[in-house]
Length: 117
Image (cartoon, rainbow, N blue to C red):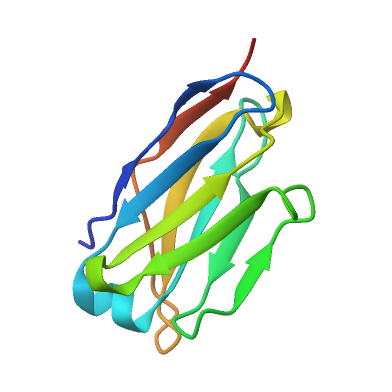
């Protein structure tokens, strides 16, 4: 079982910022697409952002211009910098990885992000 270790969630006021991090096993990180999904109460899990091993990124329209995904290769870690947070960003955020060769997917345990005054 691939273990993805997330950190950085919490409570923030509207307009504030948070940075999520996810550490992956080195061999997984080196080959796979990494990303973040989120699930709000009563809603389906949705894509937030993806980044390939080549650094190509893809964002949900709702977070474009506010969120930035990046990779720190030396630490096998993917980050999600979230700025100008809104109440509708409140959700459990899940780290995600997918192999471009096998299609195998793995998920982190999730970290809560709450945007509220």
